[in-house]
Structures are given as C-alpha cells and as structure tokens.
Length: 367
Ligand SMILES: NC(=O)c1ccc[n+]([C@@H]2O[C@H](COP(=O)([O-])OP(=O)(O)OC[C@H]3O[C@@H](n4cnc5c(N)ncnc54)[C@H](O)[C@@H]3O)[C@@H](O)[C@H]2O)c1
Ligand SMILES: [Zn+2]
Ligand SMILES: [Zn+2]
Image (cartoon, rainbow, N blue to C red):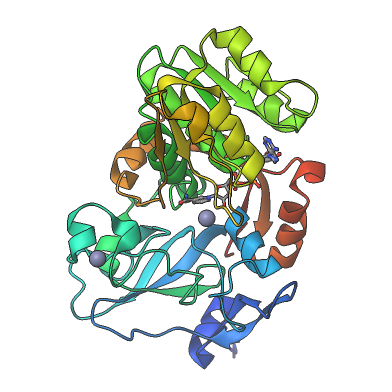
C-alpha cells in the first residue's frame, strides 16, 4: 500500500501579503524619520485608477529632499517614491488602455489627459494630477501602488523589455531632456554647459547628444562624477572647486555657451549659468530651488538671452521609450547599485552617501 504525501503549497511573501490585504512600504514619518513597514494594500478608489504591483523602483534626489523635511506638503505616514515599472494587478471600470497582467512604466507625473493643461501638453500642471505620486498621494516605494488616471499616467512596455533601463524613464530622462535639452534649444553644433553632474545632469548629457552639439562642458566639484560625465560623452570637464569656471568656459568657447543647463538647484550654480551664457543663448533651469537667486539684469538686459524654468511634463516619455528600447540611448549606464526592495533602508544609506559610495541611481527589485 502506498501513501501519497501532499506537500503544503508554499505561500510566497507576496501571496501572503495579498491574502491578508497588507504590503510592505517605505513610509515618511517626519524629517529624518522613515521606516520599511506593513501598510494596507491600496485599492481602486476611482474608475480611472489602476492598481500596480511594483517590479522595480528607485530613489530620487527629491526623495532625499522629502526626508530632510524640505517638502512640507508631504505628510507623516506618506509612502514615498515616484518612479518604477510594474504589472497591472487590477483596473477600474473606466480604464481602457490596460488590463490585468500588462507590464507598465509609471510616470512620475499623473495626468488626466483632459484638462486645459493636459491638452497643452503641460502634464506637470494637470488640474487633477501633476507631481502627486509619493508627494500628495502614496507612491512607488512599496509592493503595490494605486495610479490615478492610469490611461494617461502609465505607458505600456512589452514583457521581456529591460525593465531596469526603463525605470530611468519615470523621471530623470524626461527631466534632463525636457527641462534641460529641449528648453535649452540644443542644436547641432551648439555649445552646451551642464552645471551639476548628478543623475539629472547626466540625463541631460545623454539626451543632448541626440542633437550632436559641438561642445558639452560638464561642471561639478566631484571628480568621480566628472569622470562619469567624460565616459557619457562630455567634451570638456571643469571642477569648479579647483578651477575658475567662468574663465575656463570663456577659454573653451570664446563667447560663452549657447545653452547653460542648471542641474543642481542652488543660487551659485544658477549664477554660474547666467555668467557663462553667450549673447542669444538660453539658461535652462532644472534644479529645484529653495532660496532666491540674484539675477544680474544690469548686465544681461542687452544680451538677448532666454531663461527657462520647467517642472518635467513627461510628454516626451513615449519618444524616449523608443530610444531606450532600440538601444540608441543606454539609460542603464546610470544604474550603479542594486538592492532587493526589502533592503530599501540600506539602499537609502548608499544613495544618501552618493559621493562616498560613487552612487548614481539605485535599483530596487520586488523579489
Ligand atoms: N525640474 C524638475 O522637474 C526636476 C525633476 C527632478 C529633479 N529636479 C532637480 O534637479 C536637481 C538635480 O537632481 P539630481 O538628482 O541630479 O541631484 P544630485 O544631488 O544627485 O546631483 C547634484 C550634482 O550637483 C553637484 N554640485 C553640488 N554643488 C555644486 C556646485 N556648486 N557647482 C556644480 N555642481 C555642484 C553635485 O556634486 C552633484 O553631482 C535637483 O535640484 C533636483 O531636485 C528637478
Ligand atoms: Zn524624482
Ligand atoms: Zn489634466
């Protein structure tokens, strides 16, 4: 006589969470305080929502600003994060572009697609959305996230795509491209300066090369970051902690640069941009500024310059997605560290000490 031993089916952590309606998430608890903790799993609240299971996410410099308490709109208890790729778990009744099981790229900007700003391609100022994810509503540093206006705020990705590379498209690539390169009107033969060689400055550096500018000067006080910029295609490097940046730019260009892209967000870097822009050129500001800056109109009034500001709209995401998928743009180069989503506290440690750890972007995988 034989007996059949029935092995109990193993329940994965994810299945377990889903059964009991909870998940793990990174929660902001006021300046300097965060924890990786159990939270209720989000549910569909509006017919236009989708529930997405996170596959990969990352940490942004803006999340560090939030952690410091620089973004007072973020309330205690908020799950943060605004980047990632995932799989649709459930859709509201009005979602028509996506269904359960679809792989999607999450945009850092939520957009209804219908309001006056959305119709003008200014998703960043969507009357019902904009930058809300991981800011005014719970974000992507979690096992699941609710995405409002899913039809317009998610992008389909074919299964089998390099999903790590695509995480760079949620925020940093469209930001560098739209706020820096497009607003800076980079042209074939242009001279471009990028002040700040962090992930955003480097995203501007990579995407500026779509237009074959003659010179791309990258300026940063961190030699390691300058080294990375060199590998990514910078033609000139200036360490402004050691060299006189204005003299050096004039030596290289003769007249200043056609596009001065600010990718730091402090007064001194904006002032550098205003000092190195050539007559007829553009200062394209990307940095998030917390303090006022001095604008020397007494010098600039006659120089025919343009100054632009922009919150990323992510309207170029479909185009950038094609360039990444066709390997014209190697966004994976921006990733330096990888962690399991469960180890997000360690990942924050690394990202917070970016200079020491030589970190650019970290990838967190929900295993
Ligand atoms: N406009 C938008 O929609 C938008 C979107 C995302 C991020 N941002 C902002 O873009 C900025 C850059 O983001 P990031 O993630 O690359 O930041 P980051 O902090 O990782 O990088 C900033 C870089 O600037 C360099 N730097 C510091 N002081 C400098 C100085 N005096 N001169 C030259 N370089 C200096 C640092 O060494 C670093 O390499 C931040 O202000 C961020 O908040 C804006
Ligand atoms: Zn961001
Ligand atoms: Zn809208």
